[in-house]
Image (tube, rainbow, N blue to C red; front, side, top):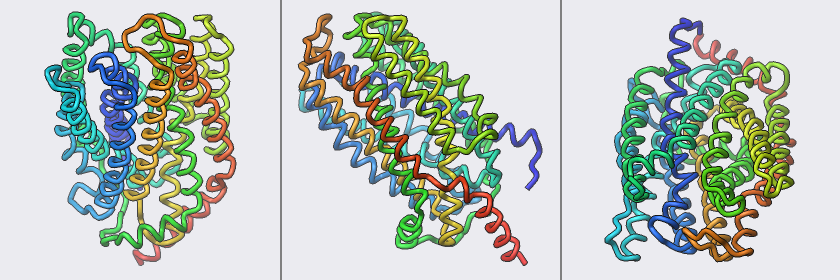
Length: 450
């Protein structure tokens, strides 16, 4: 289908803006929620580790429910698009509540409040985020345009992350006048309102132009289709390695630069590099993807990311060397995550070709579920390591065991997991089959129309 150029760009920007909204909130969670819980709310590492583990598992199952719901949603707006409208305001409300733990509550009361708000936020994040993946196959069937859409999405995602990395703590300090509890609350109020408005913009600017089936899809059909989707199984296994590495490293960034290098301000610089440099490298993806396969581009960029982490390790206490390593890693990650989201739509085509069942919602949801498992592993492991190391919140000097645990989170574990991700993706073979699969699907569609 030939679409007007103006519509194509409007859709790209509208689609990408949604990930700006997601990252405006979720980057605050990734970078600062554990810090908020330990240093502002004054909870211990074991309490936080337990909460992260339990809530992520619960949230993983809600991912599956939302994915199944999307597969069986049929409205005049499409299957995935309505969820941007329905989830916008509740997502903003729970974002505010999560960083508004009442100081007057007892410890047990705070724990209950933390569980309730974090589960609520995670569920609403699922409602607005899963459709971003499930809608991509129906926005276009052109593989290059999918890469373009994924690139624009990641451009705005990195802009959202950069906004948080550069302004997050500064706004907390400014709006709180030295009171971090008040500062975090006001920042999340502002970010929540902005994200809500953006989701409305996304709803009105994207359109599902494909021809998704209007038949109800049973749970059995979805499970059977996914069981026969070998490329997706490899892709799904990679999610564990890739995202656990990211979550555990990003969650420990503020600890590493504050306690190991001894300068909290450096954490802002490092976080900004982590989100600003990928904006530039991400823009190279449409050109790089024409030169090599998606799989190879994913592996090459993972190697660059890995090299950057190793440079940080070798730099030790050298600030400039550490920041150079952060920059190298960020450049590799920018390419890697963009091509990852482009690849995510391809197993959907394979599943339709193999089984005749469109499981874009369920597949996206299970990917999200696996991502939540990765986040649970990262959060639980981080909490355990923080507790094992004897980390003392707000203390200017940490014990040797606390420093070791922080290094494990920021350097050693991400290195091991990134190597695991590369090994897994070496087994991914779908790139070589896609052209033939799409040609066959087009022939089937023409045949059905006739």
